[in-house]
Image (cartoon, rainbow, N blue to C red):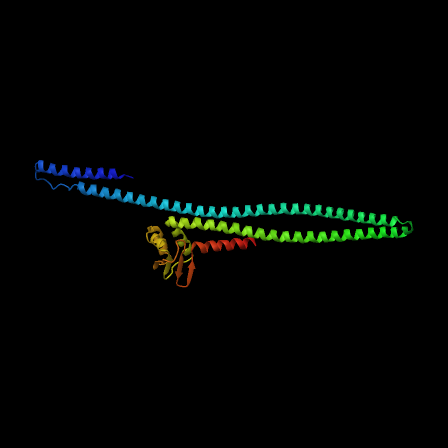
Length: 310
């Protein structure tokens, strides 16, 4: 394509040719009367036509380049949103795996502690029973005439000691079982709370990223509106309610986007609403009302992920 300096040079050359032609007409003698010559092409008109042709070509190339840049920018923004959602899912999965690993380690340590407590309790009860039996035996053995009573006392002492040991062991086991059940319940509650917190944090991050793109880039706003109206064609009328900032961006949209909206309806109104945020968008059709705001779409994504994990 010829640049602007070349266009100027062509114009100057055409103008110079015109001046030279006029001067030659003044100096040269009139031609002898002969047959009427064929009229030559006016150099000014030829120069003007060439310049118009060059200007139209330059304008068309600029429009094509601008359209290509807009398409590349839209694709880049969509890829950024997909990456944000993928990163959020990775954060949730990593947190879940980390929490499960920590809880398994805690359960293993508790099981080891329970075994040590059981052994210690048995040894303590056994030692206490032996001491008590020995004491009773010694007292009974002091009187030779009470040998029979001594033996009976030893038997009763041993029996009582075994019963106390068994009772203490059963009580310890019940306490350990109750403690393990309590720990399992607390583990589940902590894990659910932790997972919910990570998921909420991930969606908040994604929402902030998308809102920032909407505030900075008019193409993001147009993409949201176009996606909502993709399934609707030939509507009698369409009302798009957005914040004042977004409304100004939509009004100043390029002709390509405006032409695509004409496929939806020839009667489209963009209504600025001061109470709405930049990420809000409500589309009103003759038979329905569509909420296309960023928060609403993120809530739908959250619900879809929750249903998928159930």
